Length: 412
Image 1: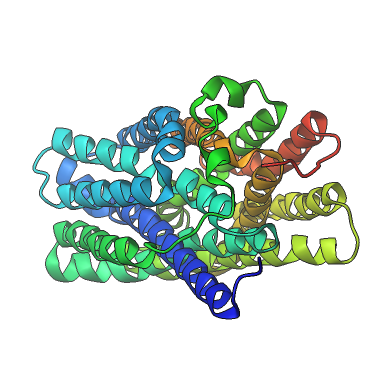
Image 2: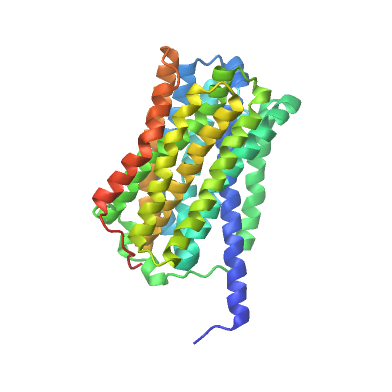
């Protein structure tokens, strides 16, 4: 029986509210984790960190997140998006506030580890929310919108955090950003109470939803995992090291870092939106799923080749545009990976697969963060990391094509 128009309209409003709340949670996720990088000069003076020690702190976060993701997929698939998301945001907001009361390096590290563990829930829960609660024709656009959220967080954070830290102390920056998460929690509990799944409940409770073995036995899962491993490292490198890059390369003070860092992530946000619109547009032109998806990815993979040129320019804002164009392409490619996952991975285990992809991406992110610390400490500068970033996406697309010569929609 066809649903009444009023019911359809109400369902659409609830879906849009869900997308907005997932967007905000994802933005807060990256606000909370970026505070550390932006306050590097202040925290170095407070805790006497070297470049290598700073890299170790970053890699501890990534490794903790990777370890947590081994269980996060099961957690999201088992308890569902609404409950798992609520728990995660509550815990990571408390962990962010813990940074503000830390009085030793060890306390700071514990707070980072808890933050990493809780924040690891975000991506699997966000992508599963699209797979479960949105019809196929709206998923790519919704994922594209949500995938801009890290960039919005990364744009606002460098503009807002330094003034807060200068006015009220670095502790206040962590306390304020953590408190925002608890405001979100109330809105999530109220705003998603009428969500209705698109996928049948029986399919969501299929044994595959609880089986990591089933996910790892599927080649489609490895396509997503490998693509995430080869590309996520670029995002983590830029997020963690760019404030230091502009300080070291161009002599910008902490108070001057906000604008170039904001430029980078503004362009990254545009990349996510462009991908969310490009792929459906190609489908409307009659292109196959395989041709539309891989052509989109190739376009972005070639565009990233401009990123290493930032090392050769003398103007920090031109460097920011070049790096930002690299992240524009990264986000476009990343949105395609997530969209590909909802196309080729059964909805019952999408959370598990995205989580495993997150494990791989966090581990390679940890590796490039450590490589940067070693390279800077030993006088090699930023060149090795920029070369890796510029070529990563062509390797990722080759891997996708070898594992999935023809991409096809899969039944839920």
